[in-house]
Length: 83
Image (cartoon, rainbow, N blue to C red; front, side):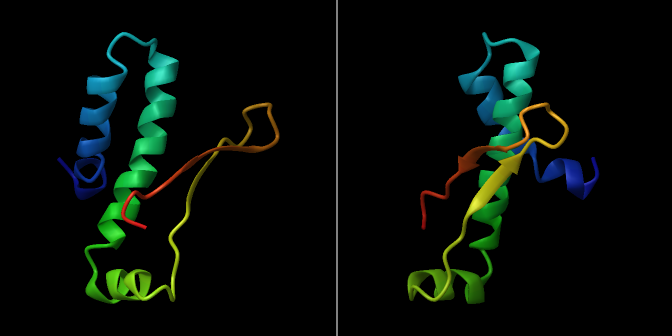
C-alpha cells in the first residue's frame, strides 16, 4: 500500500465504524472530512507545529470543498479536537 493511501486508513476505519449503515455517497463524504481531520492530526506530530499551536501562534483549520458539486460553496469544516 502506498503512503498516500496508508495515511487515510484511520479515516476509512472511522468511516466504517460510524457510517457502516449509510449509503456509499454518505460514506465517501464522511471519509473525505475524516481525511482532513487525520491530516491535521498528522501536522501536530511535528514539534514545531504543535509548539506553535500550543503557544497560540498558529491555529489549524481544515476544510472540505466540493468543487463542481453544483452547490458552489464550501462543505462542512473538519475541526481538530487538539486545537
